[in-house]
Length: 375
Image (cartoon, rainbow, N blue to C red):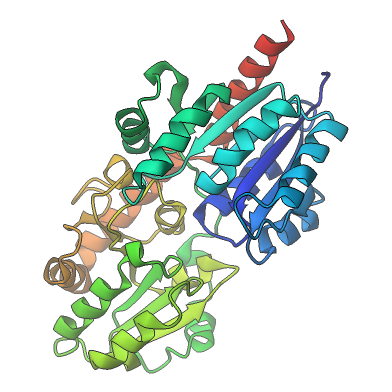
């Protein structure tokens, strides 16, 4: 192996979510004198692959429709072997479990296993397979301390082999630099006197859009023109939209689907919500704080490592729509509090969750593992 080291980022999904946005930021900012990135994905729409190619980064969709589809894993093996790949970084359980032994058999010098969330949904066989294949991993990288501790406790990983490199906030324009009138027109909000809330998350059960819908039923009497802008791919086949109709608040919600530029959704909103039942370190949380908006979130996973209640955001218990509604009302009626939280939120991200910090931490780890392999 010689510099620049050829490294592969293998993601379970090629749909754009928090992990995929993190990978995009990482490969775009890696030092090209040290590393030559290749991005591979197993399932999904291929949007991540398209974005990488737009950046001039080698990328390929492996079309792994089944977790052990031999053709896809044979192609993965061939890429690693033929391209003399030095290091493989795996994201998600689908990528990690088969990817670890295949990467080792293909001769990768170092293997890094990503820990993106606390994953309370895992079954016993997920844990068993994770432990079994951990022998091929040189180092695990968790996005937050909560995810690190969950993996150590559940999988029994050696704590010295699990490090934390927090996610970073993607670069986004500050809310005050955006054309507010144009954004309100784009999202058909000219007649709304608010409050306007953003929920930036793909529609999965753990993102708890249902709790937001229930909270809306408690708020519409006080705020009859409240608007919820929900940006994210619908992975629940319209279940949330149907629930909003059942609860009588469908007209208060805009389901935007996938949005390439979420900064516009955040900027047009007065503040944002993330009422998840479990998380890792959500990129959308950092994006909201970067743009300069206050976040109401639940203290799950790595969220309380970033958000301090009443200091740079508000925290509410998960699965409690009444508490969520009370926090929304509080921010909607207390402009001074909101502005104070916005300033501290932006300072927090700039100080602790910059791209430079994430990229430098990742590069140091890669170099440590690769130099050790060379010796």
